[in-house]
Amino acid sequence: MSDNLFLRNRGFLCKLRASAYEKARVSFRAAADLFPARAAPDRDLLRALDTLLAELETAFAYASDAIRGLKRGHVPRYRHDPRGVMEEEIVLCHFLEEMTTLARFLRKRVETDLKIRLYRKRIHRLQAQSPKPAGFMQGILDSLGELTQEENVDLKRLFELMERRYRVGDRLMEVLRDKGEKVAQPSSANLTPQPPLHS
Picture 1 (cartoon, rainbow, N blue to C red):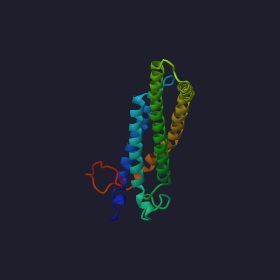
Picture 2: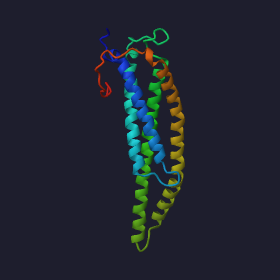
Picture 3: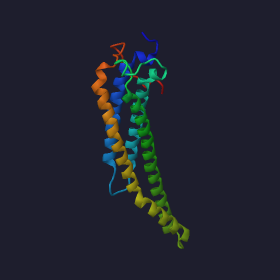
Picture 4: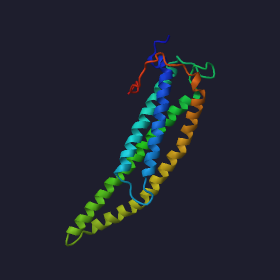
């Protein structure tokens, strides 16, 4: 029996990977449902993106752990040994890493949009309180107005991009589920879910 912790628990890690992927998929749908098509994003969306990012990071960690032995040269490829690593598992790691990056970027865009709106409100207050509003304040407001008009369009495109990319991930997971019965079983029937092994 291998002394590599990742290889011994490979079947178990594959199950955790599948569960984490599904949670991330559900989190994405929840965030997408909160996206306001005709209004500015709010803090509920930001919190939903926090959840999505955490779920994707967990899925990526488990996916990486499930093939870690391959990187050390201890696990054969699936085409040579049904107990080995499938090419789809390697591609899935790259996919989840990309999706994590996209989710992080999307979250930052929403957070920045919220801060810009707060800044605009502050400028409006200053303008209202001043008997002689400074001309530069109006210039700032005009610039921020142009910026926010296009913000929802950009955010919508990001959500659409992630949805298209998720179709790739769904297909990869479908292949892994179809072949999953041939993946090595966990070494212990009493294993319980643990955090990713290399967090």
